[in-house]
Amino acid sequence: MESGAFRHAFAVTEFRALWGAMAVVRAGTQLGRVALAVLAYERTGSAAVTALVYALTLVPALVGGPLLGGLADRYPRRRLIAVCGLARAGLIALVAVPGIPLPVLCALVFASQLLESPAVAAQMALTPDILPEDVYQAGIAIQHLTSQIVSLAGFAAGGVLVAAVGTSGSLTLNAAAFALAALIVLRGVRPHPTARTAGDGEGRRGGPLEGLRLLVSDHRLRSLLALAMLAGFQVVPEALAAPYAAGTGQGTAMVGLLMAAIPVGNVLGVFLFTRFCSTEARLRLLGPLACAASAPLVASALIPGPVAALVLWALVGMLGAYQVTANAEFVRIVPTERRGQVLGIASAALVAAQGLGMIVGGLLATHLGVTGALGVAGAAGLAAGVPAALAWRRARARAGEVVPGTAGPSVG
Image (cartoon, rainbow, N blue to C red; front, side):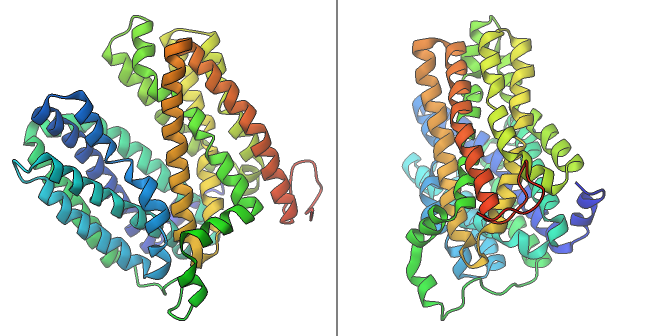
């Protein structure tokens, strides 16, 4: 990446506000997740109920993305982010009320997470509008790095904070974080025109099906989503960290290290990939890196042991840095009037792929053992990555972009 691109992105006042709001929301959300898990277990003593409540912080994206992402195209995105933030603050403040019935708590958490989808879609759709094209990729990298770092720190510090201020106090802090983020956006981001005008009859009729049609019909969008969904294979180690540690005679401390290996590797990979590779190089390397990111899983099956796993799983995260460029290019390609809608569908597909990968990985581990499951996930990721990489190469050629092995633009 061109020298100083990170600095130039932060020089944009609106981006600083959008970034700051995102960081505050992420920190509050991570604290809230820890508090909800502790609260559910304290109230019920049931691991199943605890897992259900925790899942309610993740599952709504499958529904909210396709159904509510389009709101980011119909309403001013700055206002939508703020309204969703304030509404979520109110919902989580109710969750923080001591003694609230568990079914009501679950309904409030589900509603709060539903509102995350249009807010995130609006944030992603707004980013290319407020950043110059030459620093846009740097801005996406900054957002991704911040999200990963805050997530890691949030889980590490969440338990300490919950112990210090209690579950109700932690959830109140979570609600305050949503309200603060809304204020930051209202103060720091100027109003932007609505993506679709009121007279855009076709856009108003289209709904999720129109976004899906655009996603399926565009070769570049389709291939970029396929590359991104390879995360479904690459996330398997996180789901198998606990049984892997137990199988190698390690304790809970190693479980935490193993679960952190991929995110830590990803932070390093994203920084190196975006700092030292040009935009063209990153786009050219998308396919090879997407395939290579599954290879360490095969090696992890062949070279057992906690130290090898830490190194190899961190390498999965490093190679997975391609996801940031894939995400940035995806957002750039989607027409601005459809960004929220298409991003909502794509986000739901990515969440589904990761969830399915974890479930299938767990089922494979019960029949093949943990190392066998890792090997199958790696081999399947490689097999699925090759056609996705080739599809991306062909899509760039059809769009008239430079592709590997050509001297200049190639139009299909």
